[in-house]
Image (cartoon, rainbow, N blue to C red):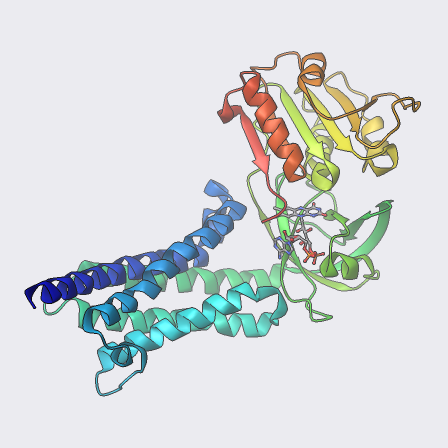
Length: 398
Ligand SMILES: Cc1cc2nc3c(=O)[nH]c(=O)nc-3n(C[C@H](O)[C@H](O)[C@H](O)COP(=O)(O)OP(=O)(O)OC[C@H]3O[C@@H](n4cnc5c(N)ncnc54)[C@H](O)[C@@H]3O)c2cc1C
């Protein structure tokens, strides 16, 4: 009897602890999402989004196990799963749990939900927060004052204000019209809009069409240089990119950004390692360096399948400055094929690095391309003694 009581108390205490951790982490998840655009310049919005996706599993773990421990402790599921509004504290907690599960499911189906519906769902996260706040404040703390709830309340209010102000401002600055679409290779094209934004070469924006049931925002790196009309060079991947390819001059497009901090440092020699459409940030950076006459050594090592797959070959071949060197690595060519200047068969390896990068350990490396290429390049640099602090990687697939 005594043992059952002890186990029950223990399970109850764990349940309470899970509830507190769940509430604190939920607050942090909502706050970091609402203010993500503010932290962009310090951390990079892409990194925040990736962190949030992983962190939401952590939050879900604590939120979902919070009532499970109470059920195990009391032996009754009904009390903790069916809201009884006579006991508002507990009912609010149960309602918060159900909304949380609903929002989780909606997030997983994000791409299939209309943007407007998604916005309403987002509002539900605040409803969920306030239910959880009430539940925790009136149920969890008894009569002691607990600053956690005041801090959480203030953070969410700051988050809501920041998000609302950002949205109002973005409404005025996000609408653009297509200026041109140019085929670059058999599966890539460049979309240019009329007008520009203030951005730093290497950054990306979110594009949204809001038509053909395509409501999700899709990230694309700006491939034009600062001061030019905004261009995005896009590889056909799925529904969004297929429909974007058929846009016509004058069509409407919404552009949110710029974001990200895949921005080269102004010191040291730079080595750009690109694969496929991962060339886009480097195109923008190179054009910017040419336009501003920046005298910083840049070596571009660019992997493609064949010569016809090299995006921007013409543009790179016309950069004739002593600070720029390039190598096109081709993976799908016959060994006896006659290749154009600056082309070699193969993948990036130690030999390529030694031949093309003079100051291997002293250079800064920027990598953007398919997963396999990124992993190989990172391993190669590590094996050649390049400190990881000198290696920057941009992910195109979240
Ligand atoms: C920071 C960043 C910069 C990028 N820059 C470029 C670029 O310059 N040029 C280019 O061609 N591609 C770029 N991409 C990739 C591009 O976003 C996807 O290829 C595109 O969204 C695919 O959409 P889809 O509907 O055509 O294909 P889908 O079939 O829906 O998606 C193909 C893959 O793209 C990724 N993806 C799809 N939707 C999204 C989304 N809403 N957010 C994030 N990833 C998504 C997923 O990994 C998915 O598996 C970039 C991605 C990121 C994260």
